[in-house]
Image (cartoon, rainbow, N blue to C red; front, side, top):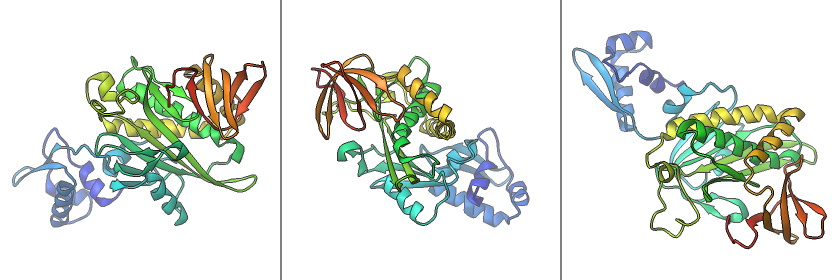
Length: 329
């Protein structure tokens, strides 16, 4: 925790904290305390100052600052470092740059505004400033390259649990192979997993998550295909609480992925919320279209489809829609 975060931790919304007590506890001068208070105000914190009583935290900014997230995390790996950006092209690119500099495993990049995020198939994923969640995590897993597709499924489970925990159990998000989160037939979020690997060894994985939280698509051309938590609930949701929950749940899944039993459990749990299983689907793949009934996920995260001829095919990649609907794009 940096000094600025330590000063913030000494402030409360319930009453005043003495500047003298803070300076003694943190072993700094009262002038240094004041300088950190000024910096915190510049970051958007509303801090009242009283000559007699000290400082009081009157309001927090609606930003995903490290000082807002780090103290709440109980993780051991994920969140080892947190990079906060007001704006970036892509949080994944930020993490890639940090990995190239030797970043510790679990480093997280979070952006208030992402202008050039990537989805699958080269699609853009943009976020509304201060309304959605856009983050990426750098990881060094001990798995084979063939198991990396399970990262998307595991991340989907983590995000789903976090959403239900923070936003309410009446929400029933569904997961769509390979990397989407749906709510009431509309896209709530997406996941993109990128890796660098040798033939038999994964060097690193960048796990990126985009989630629609307090943004609205009303009046836009996305209204028919996308939704957000504020749209579904009719109230705003704390992005801070949601990010903390996502990172906590992601570490649970990451640890589970390190064992063969865990990989099997992830696959079976994914099938509980699988939007496609048992339904007729059209899948566009690099080798051509596949039509049939979705039959679940195999041990390497591939979609199983029972084709019209009766044979079952395993699809490593593709874009699936409900047959004849044109939906879930």
